[in-house]
Every structure is written in C-alpha cells, then in structure tokens.
Length: 138
Image 1 (spheres, rainbow, N blue to C red):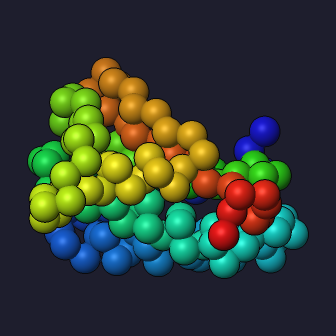
Image 2 (image 1 turned 90 degrees about the horizontal axis):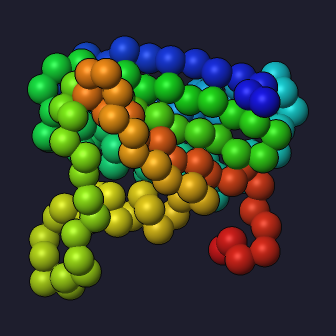
C-alpha cells in the first residue's frame, strides 16, 4: 500500500535533472514529516542518485517529456521514470576502462528491486530503495 505518491512532468532541458533530485529530496522530507517514516541518510542519498541516473539516461537517449513518479510504502521508496523511447535499456558488461555509461549498472546495484516495462508509448523504469538501514546496508 502506498502511503504517499507524487508525480512530476519534467521539462526536457538539462535543469530537469537537478529539479528531479530536488523533488525526490522534498518527497522524502514529506514522507518523514507527514507519515513519520524512518528515512535514513543512505536512503536519501541513494534515492537522489537513482533519480539522477534514470533522468539523465532519459534526457540522453529519449526525445520528449520525462515523467517522474515517487511512491512510498512503510519500508521503501519507489522511483519510476517514464520516457517516450520504447527501446529497453540493458546494463553493459563490466569494463573498468569504459568511461561513462555505468548508470544502469549503478541503479541495479543499489536498488532492492528493479524493473523495466514497456508502456503503450515508451517505457517505464522502476527502482525500489529501502527507507531504513538494516543488515547488509552500510
């Protein structure tokens, strides 16, 4: 059950990446203040990282608008980014000499859950981050 949910249509310019991070931080503040949910510093940092990586990839590879949706349950924050490009991204093989193009690998490494789904138009990428630190989290 989602306790809190917001959506944002982001402009297609480069400022939308910073705007998306700002929206994510404000959303987690609201979840903590209004819903009294434990939002760890780690969850805040990882949420902003995932938002930044997903929105950056959308800006880089998909023309048109970007939709960001944030949802929170009692234990996770769910980040969904929709774009108009139907091409499903794939994490590339590990290559320490490659410069850049590690965003999807990073998101998959830090997310509790990750999925990509084709939509009638475009695709939606969703990642879930634990709100509270627990065993195995630094």
